[in-house]
Image (cartoon, rainbow, N blue to C red):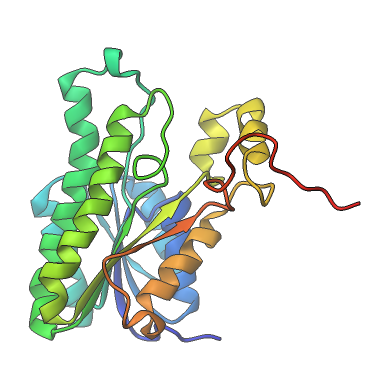
Length: 256
């Protein structure tokens, strides 16, 4: 099937690399008109050039930047049908080593960025009486965690809570609000900051036996952005290869 979001106007925050780029590529394949926003101007411009999209440098933790990105989408295309807030940071820091400034920065990008994207996109979507708001959460925070991810876990759990509240408040405007909770996804950041041993250990913990790809996550976003998800709001889709399922380490039943 192709053209599931044909001519829909989609704004994607955090689209320069990784999962965000995967979402942008998948949306482009299905006919969306794209506006991409990211703090990484060079990478973002490159992704936009690949996809025939418009790019704006944007720090989603700043309301003015979020509003500028929304304004650009409406200026270029006359409307805004889909907003995806994928921008996020995840520095590894034990709680005892996390300063208030460290904490605030993670919350500013991950959680306030979610609010900023939603609040900015609400203006045109409310006027249209239609729209899709989509957010990247994580299995880390809402379901599981690990040492060094206290601030990240709190921010992602907050995103999942925000999704439910926004879905209720915006339902009367014809706007649906949903999210995706990825597990361990093989991105440039994972390759750069995680060693081979860590990656193998993650693969061993996933029933499907591999890390996910940005496209795996993008497919879930595409479904939620499409008409197929008209009656879905206030929920999240876990994309983790079954990572949350096992009760312990010895879960594999190998065929004879």
